[in-house]
Figure 1 (cartoon, rainbow, N blue to C red):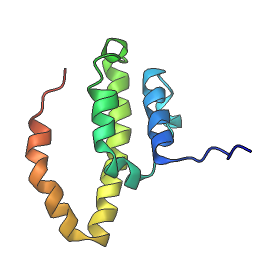
Figure 2 (cartoon, one colour; figure 1 turned 90 degrees about the vertical axis):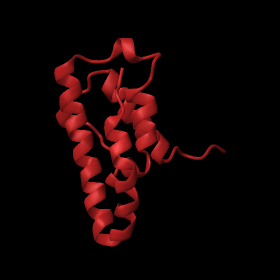
Figure 3 (cartoon, rainbow, N blue to C red; figure 1 turned 90 degrees about the horizontal axis):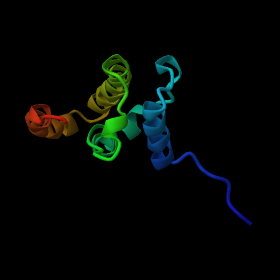
Length: 106
């Protein structure tokens, strides 16, 4: 007997990636929870921003801007919640922030 599929973090992130490449309407995007976004930033970078195989299929600039604006809002919400729960953990994130911001994307 097979177990029903759960809506794991990996499934949610994969759905978000597929929505990006299929030009899913921004107002209908199914964002993972802010916590999942915050904990899986490397997935967003490696599977969406920095995926050499799919970069030639990247949406037009206006769509990308709207998409990332919504995703960043989710990340900011996760950071806000984290700051309320554990302010010390945000200090750790701030140490890596300059390096992340200086990275140039293809």
